Image (cartoon, rainbow, N blue to C red; front, side, top):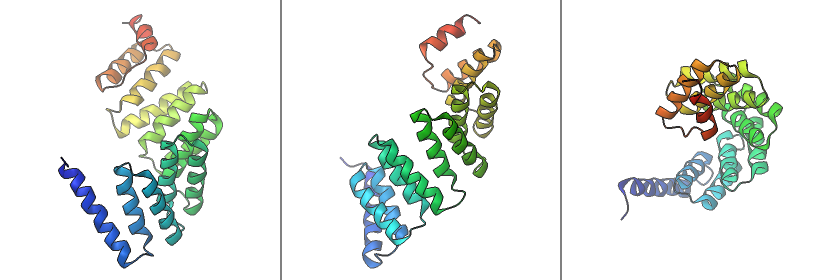
Length: 208
């Protein structure tokens, strides 16, 4: 049985396909159709539409970012990195592209490159919460505890309930031996649904 949401998506897809039929050179219609197809997990079709979108509108940075997202779905980190580099070259100050580049470098263990890209992402978009969280994580991995805490606190200014930021603060405050704050943020991370690592929970129990 098709849900109303799925039916609405199918209707939206049909509308975008009709728009493309009447104006095949409209990059935005190809892009909108691709996003809907991604929502339906029809990645191969979405990829073809995104390539058409770029063919019509070569500066459509979001299309490159979406292509990068499809690469990520397939476990292709290099492909994701390449598309997001094209995204930031097609539009100066495209925060999402820098955020994605930083995330991929973080996955690859390239901490300096990750931090460089994520700092740019947060400068271009001061409300980019995921970039702040990834930046906090990168700082943590590089042993920059104070910088990590500052990035996590910035994320919590944007959304006080963001569980991953609380988890990052738990680890950072443990590193700083600020155990009271570590316990507080561990409890908040768990309360907001984060699955705190067993070794962290075990460590935290020593300071209750």
